[in-house]
Length: 136
Image (cartoon, rainbow, N blue to C red; front, side, top):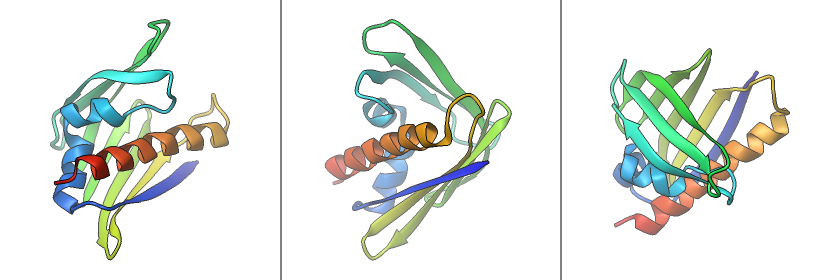
């Protein structure tokens, strides 16, 4: 099942793209819960390139690598990637109120859809806040 989320970021497209694809930015916004964080990230933003975000509980009790491979990259417009046997698409569309960032991803079977939606939307909301706060 595909799950769709979106947000509109009041910042220039170049800044929105940079904030979404730069490890130095990713570590500031990539968390689905206040008790978690992303202490490190790596990005090789090209078709066939890999990415990894290390996601950990702040108390150090658990963590995992969210990792995958880019399957399509169109600067300032589209990112598609595979992670495990799942896939996601991130679209960037300029409009009168800013840049709409849409995320479509394959849900997983282990957790309820609503839990997945809330976690991924929280990450997207954190991204929006970071991108707007750091826009030049």
